[in-house]
Length: 242
Image (cartoon, rainbow, N blue to C red; front, side):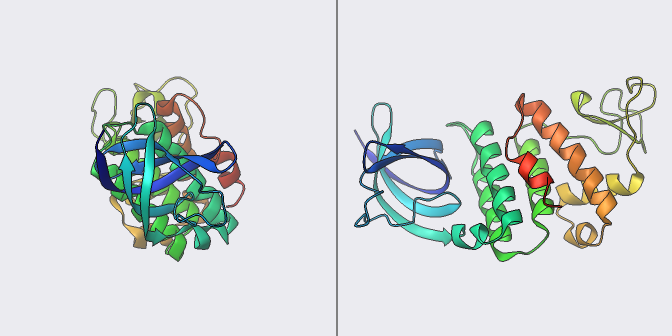
């Protein structure tokens, strides 16, 4: 069976036997990959910390029947150490890799890989508020997966906006006629933050009020978890850090 090389970001690891680990990674060209790293838990391991969560590595893998085998790993981005020093960054990074793990399979696109790497890099460098980096990642990765929310025209009947009701089950902002009875409204300033997060307008995001960013975060969490069909466990920890 052949060997292959790829760039990959480490999503999670599990112990296997006395010295090995199963490593789940999102690769640039091969989508989500699960592989065995033999001897990685020994102090003399040749892999060191290159196969820990949030790290980006150039890996060489041997294609196995059920699990691949990691043969080599060279570090491309050492983000784990800086992220782990800050609780808000650490919880946001956990929510990001958990989302990537659930969304992606062997047909994941290079754009999804690059988006995750960019988000982890921004967290490690502290470029913006950790929750805002996470929110931007969630909106963008949902869009790449075919679930881009509508923030302008009604997501159900396409009636031109502006509208103020967001319904995750309907795909975004909806007009008053389409909104279910009792649907909560969100401020127009919070909708502007949502648009800025998905567009990468960080000047607008960074200058937003805590009230608007909190409202946007709630909308994004509800939308992402609706499409994933189950909760993102790490989000409950992130919400407590604002």
